[in-house]
Image 1 (tube, rainbow, N blue to C red):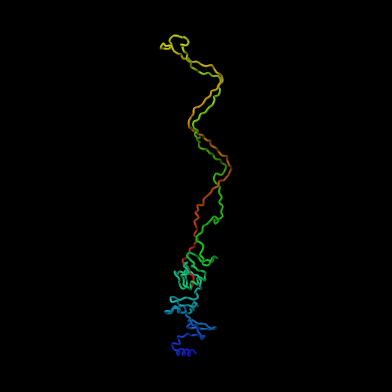
Image 2 (image 1 turned 180 degrees about the vertical axis):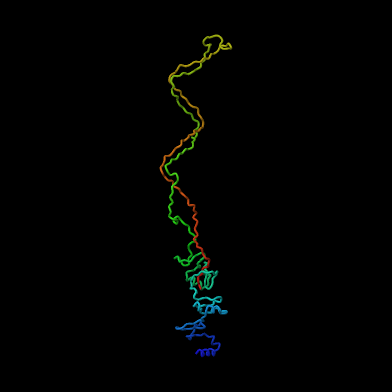
Length: 308
C-alpha cells in the first residue's frame, strides 16, 4: 500500500505535491498545508537523545524533535533550542539576568501599556494593567492582599516608644538620708529715698544747768576809770551759770542727708531635715529617630511578565 501511494504522488506531478494534503480528511483547513485528522492516533515527531538533537547541523527555525533524555518536545527558535515543557502561560512572572524583552517576556519597568504590541496590549489589559505596567524596581514579590501588580510599602521603618522592650529602670540618688540645707543670701541694698529729715523730741534729763556769757557796760553803772590795757572805758564781758531749771525736753530736727541707700544683710537660714527621700532624675535617650533600613541582602535581577 505504501508503494502504491508513493507511485500515485509521483504520477500527480509537481503541481499536485504543492496542493493541500489531508490525512483523515478530504477537506483540509485553508490555513494548513497539511492537516491530520483523527480521534485515535497522534503525530509522532522524530525521537533522539539530547546529544543527537544538539548535533543536528544548521537546524531550521521551527524544527521540532522529541528529546528522549528530557522526555519533552523541543523546538529551535533560530538561535537556540527551547524546551516546550518550560514555556510560560500569559501573565506568568519570572526573574532573570536578561536586560531587555525577549521571547514574549516583557521587563516590568513601569512603561506605558500603549508602547507594547497590539497583542501584548490586549493581554496586559486582560491582566488589569490598562495604563502602565508595574515597576518592579527595588520591590519584592509577595502575596500581601493588595491590588494585583501594586507596588507598596517602604524599605525603612522608624521605631516608636511602643516598639521598645518593656523595661523599668529603678535607682536612688546619692545622699538620700536625713539632711538639711543652709541658705545664705547675699546682702541687699535698699532703694534710695531722696532728701529727707527726721523730727523728734529729746527725753527729759532731770535737773541740769546751762553755761552762759553776758556783757556788762561799765558806763551804765557810773564807773569811771580805764578799763583795759589801752586806758579806755568800754564794755566788760562776764560768764556765769544759770540756775537748774528742772525736768524739761528739747525739740530737735536733723539735717537732710540727700539721696542714699541702706545695706541690709539677710541672715543665713537652715532648712529642717526631711527624713529619707529620693530625687527624680530625667535622662534623655539622645536618640534622633533615624529610620532603620530593613532591606535584606539581595541579588539584583530583572523581573519580567509573559505577554506572548
